[in-house]
Length: 308
Image 1 (cartoon, rainbow, N blue to C red):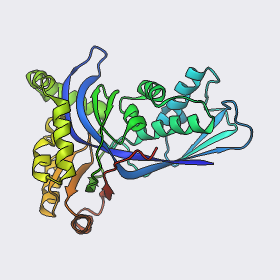
Image 2 (tube, rainbow, N blue to C red):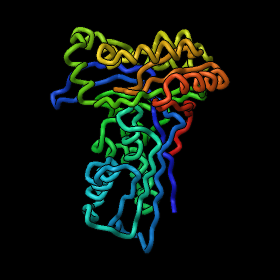
Image 3 (cartoon, rainbow, N blue to C red):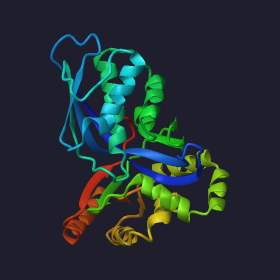
C-alpha cells in the first residue's frame, strides 16, 4: 500500500495579466503549499505490473467522471496507451481519496489530488516518468495541477501551467477562514472580465514578477510582515469583494485578532491570515470559532518541501 498526502496551497499574490484566445486567463502568481491535506491510499490486490482497471473510492459525493483524480488516470492511461478507465470497471488497483481540503475554496484541493494520483501511480506501477513528464501530463488535467507536481513554492504563470520552482526555508503560521459559501472559479473570472480594467491587465504584464517573488521570499525569510503585506494582492479579490462583503469583514477580524497580513486565496472563498507566532494564531482561531461557528476555520503552516 502507498499513501500520499496532497497539500492545499495559498496564493501570496495573484495578478491577472490577460485573456487568452482559448478563454482562459493568464496569471502571474506566487504559490506555496500549506499543511492541510487530502490523503490518497493506493492499494493493489494482485499483480499490478501492468496498468490494471482501477476503482476510485472517495468520501465526496462526486461522480468518478467529474473527479480530477479520475481525469488524471484517463490522461495517464492515454499517455501510456494501456487502458481506458470507465465508471463500470472495478479492478486490481484501488485509490481511496479522503478529503480535508474544502471544494471551491481557492486552496487547490482537486488539483493537488490530481497531482498526487499521477505521482502515486507513477511510483506504484514503476512507470518511470520524470517530474517534467508528469508536469506536462498534469497541465492537461487542470491549470494548477503542475504546481503540485513541482511545488512547494513557485512562481506560476500562463494559465497556471508554467511553474518555476523557488526555494524558501521559512514557514509561517497561518489561519484559514472559509465561510459556508463556495465561489465558482469560472464565475470569479467572469467578474474579473467585467470589472478589471484591461489597462490594469496590460500594466500587470509589465510587472517584474521574478523580482516581486524574490522580494517576497526574502521578506518571508526574515518575517518582514510589513513588506509581505504590501506585496500581497489578488486581482480576483478586488473584482468580487463587492459581491461578498464578508471578505473585508473576515480580513478585518483577522487583523483585529493578530494577523499581520491577510488575503483571499485564489478565487476564494478562503481568506488566510499570516501570524508572527503560532500562539497568536491559535488565540485568533479560538476567538473566530466562537464568532463564526458555522465557518471552516483551520490552522496551517506554509511548507518548504513538497510532501508528494
